[in-house]
Length: 403
Image 1 (cartoon, rainbow, N blue to C red):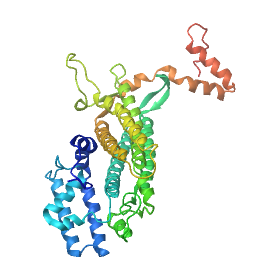
Image 2 (image 1 turned 90 degrees about the vertical axis):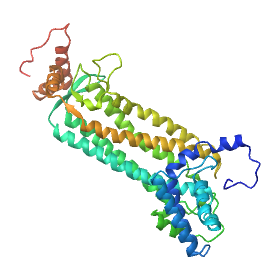
Image 3 (image 1 turned 135 degrees about the horizontal axis):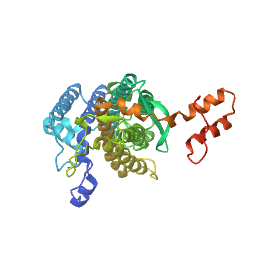
């Protein structure tokens, strides 16, 4: 029996289609769904809708589900539509009629919203920690190699002198920007939708401030339609933040793929980080960097999907929104994996000083030479043209040995 079902006439083909991937996806949300339910039943007891004994029994069994889930011993059955159903049926099986009271005063709409918000805040906190750790590794690498020279490139051609330290710090600083964006999203997420029902409120005097405190939210989402309309919008913002992190790591990985080319050899990867070829025994491939680079495109696809599903829907819940769950979960998982493996790459990244010193060829000093002439009294444009002759083989070259 479905939580919403009042007849036995549901076509099994429709049931399978509308259920979709929820039994698989909801497994990740089970602990958060239970935590929200525990706050809900505690609140129901505080306003006299259920007894303290019933609330205690329900909370004990909800905690049992969390423990079983952590041990890999809780599942969503093939005949159960989603995680909400699996949880409630477990409670009914263990507690009889008391289990049937867990859903009093709420809808699956605010139930999933609350579970998602708790899950999202948890994952954002974890992502914040990991991005911070990666930024620290960038900073340590920069300090260790602060004075190592490396050519700066424009148009994939040597341009001006730079340092390995400055290169690494550029990504450190970018990741700090990303943390600001992630923090702003967390602030928006940190609101309690529990008690908004299906988007139009609940006709009993729920104590929403109590559940807000119990769940650790910063504030109540007072307007129930506002809460419902946030679904999809907030999730898209999360993936947009993920894309900012992956944008920076895409460029970082692209740099390293280039810098570790055997023809350049500025950097090299520890042997534990490279793979080989099934036919060419000499190959050492930077597969990990290529997959990091590609991850931006993966998550961009999920973000596009997620952003577009809620568009053009009138206010309130629509089953379309069920389809925002998969891109959110997959996009977050990819981002978390990429940030984690990027730290491993940083730990195994080696700087080849001899190759870097050889790379600092004379043309990288062209701007310095222009500035020397400017300091001697020549206009910048004349100095620029004078120095440009040095790098045009078909023209007479000026004597710049004093520069």
